[in-house]
Image 1 (tube, rainbow, N blue to C red):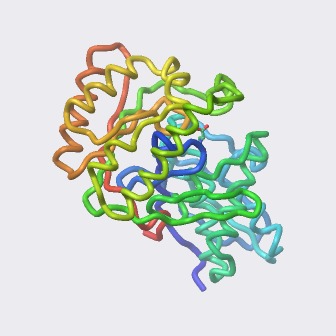
Image 2: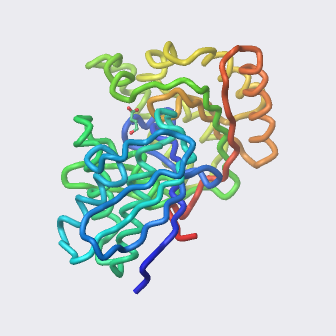
Length: 307
Ligand code: HSE
């Protein structure tokens, strides 16, 4: 059995316009890297090799909280050292803590000879959210671990469904360098929604899932509309509607907020179109004083992987 592994753990887009809290997909071109090795000393140690400040207290870091949940259930007579090379800025809306949690439990499971299923690993990785006092919504963790579009059908019992990803579907992300805490982004949402809007949302969500199964890009385009969340959270994201209009004019199939924001994502057919959308988004933010970064990515079908 190996004593050290290195993993890539992808950034993820959750909600995907009409699938609030229940749908997500991983990005292939942006993610964290982690080196996890066995140590003779029991317990968990964290080392940060990132440009970002991360909590080194093992009760506060997403990677170690999830790792502790996993090793608590096996009680091995050795421990683990986790080197984190974080490339996803915390608070970006593309699943930064989900990537830490997912990558870490995946790596430790490999080092222990794969005793756990992906469903088990999702539950361990979700421990970090409990710790944060947050509502559990594994719409980042499940696609990070499973790969491709993933539908979280139920939390208790945990039921997750992998949905096919059309071959030519690409994602463009623009990440304004401002931080929006998920807890705050949830606190501004209404507790109740109208029946009319709920019906429109269900219709869009059902047709989006169908369109992914049959690779119907026209139907993906008409399904990627959110009637519940975007109008509230868009107020937290500077120039959101300008970016969205520019992306759609450049030929994106749809554009909305990634997770709880501030990142904005757009889906396009083909990498060339996705890069044109990137330029259009770029142009909007270049006219502001806000720093930002952009990414174009295929939708990862594998999720976390050994590298
Ligand atoms: N789906 C969550 C939200 C974020 O929109 O608040 C990611 O889990």
